[in-house]
Structure formats: structure tokens, C-alpha cells
Length: 244
Ligand SMILES: [Ca+2]
Ligand SMILES: [Ca+2]
Image 1 (tube, rainbow, N blue to C red):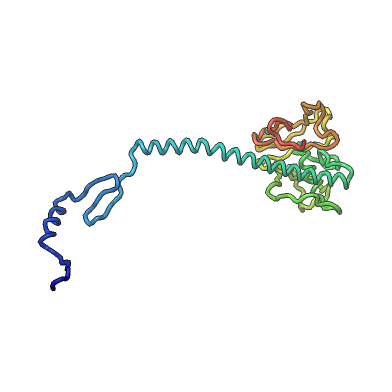
Image 2: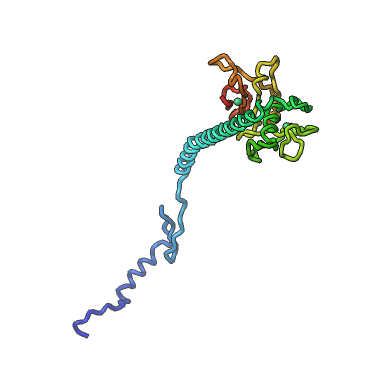
């Protein structure tokens, strides 16, 4: 039809092109991938050994920077949480003192019960603050923070604690070690040493005087401390966390 442009399939013109294309190699490796007949592309190995070594080195450097940062942040968070525990104990002990006119003693032996030689101060603090007597319930313990690492019991319940058994419980810090507690009456007693169990170890703990004042910390009150992130008793010094 005149005056009308029509595109038709021209078999004669396309044949040489097709023949040339078919003469090319079936595959042609490249950085992007491997061409297979039919136009399918399969990715080739994207990295050389050198590139992989560079990536591994970068990951190592990042890990070297990030791991200490994360560990440090976790330790700071635990230290902060332990200080908050001590603040909570201090408030409860002051309320107990207001009611009874005395702080929890350094041992329940003061109430006439036989106790072993381990963890006496903190067991006494837990027992006193857990009394179910009128005006009691000085504190709400987090269940996971209570333990009985020396597995001791007594024959009677001297403070009428609410636990429903005769176990002498301790309270642990966020590092998993029991706190140390002393009433001020016992700071300066000859041989004022208390045995505490931390993990599998039993060590002596002694109230220390302040290097700045030369006097005991909280001379008219009580000392309570956590042995801190290093898991070693430093008698309230070094990295220990105390109520002073
Ligand atoms: Ca115990
Ligand atoms: Ca320590």
C-alpha cells in the first residue's frame, strides 16, 4: 500500500547476524559473572584471596575496638546496678533501725542462735530486713538475687522472716557474689574478721579505715560492700563498691 511505512521481518538481512552470534564462544568469563547459553548469568567468585584477607583484617580491627567497648559498658551497667542495690539496702536498714533502735547485727548469734562461721553479716542483714513482724517488710527482694551459698540452716527463726524455711540466705550483687556486711560495733573488735564465700573460695573480710580520714567508714552505722567487678575481696577498697 503506497504512503504507508511497514516494518516487516526481513529474514535475509538477519541471517548473517545470527550466524555471527552463534560463532562466538558459548561462555565468556568476566568479573560480573559467567554467560551461559540462553542468557543465564551465574555469579563467579567475587573476591580474590587478597580481598578476603583485607575483609578479615577489617573485621578483626572492628572486633578489637567493639568487644572491649561492649564489655566495658556491661561492667559499668553492673556496677551501677550494684550501687542501686546498696542504696536500697541502706534505706531499708535505716527504716529497721528506726523501728528497733539498732542496725542488723554482724551475726545472728546475737539473737541466741548457733550459726556457722561463713557469711554471718549478710545472713543477719537479710534475716532482719525480711522480718514479718508488724512494721516489717523493709525490702522486696529480687528472687534471683537471694541465695544460700554455704547451704546453712538454723534451728529456729530468730527474726520471724517470711521465707517459710530455716535457711540462712544471702543477697548477691549483679556480679553473682554475696555482699559483705558489718555492724559498727564489730569494726574494731580484735580480729574483726569475717569469713565469706565467693564462688568456691572462702576468704577473710575486714572493715578498713578510710585513707583520707583515718577513721572507719560510717563509724556510727554499718558497712556493706560488694567485692566488685574483679571478683576479689579488697575489704571495700580498689574496685569494691561500698556504702560510703
Ligand atoms: Ca547461708
Ligand atoms: Ca574487688
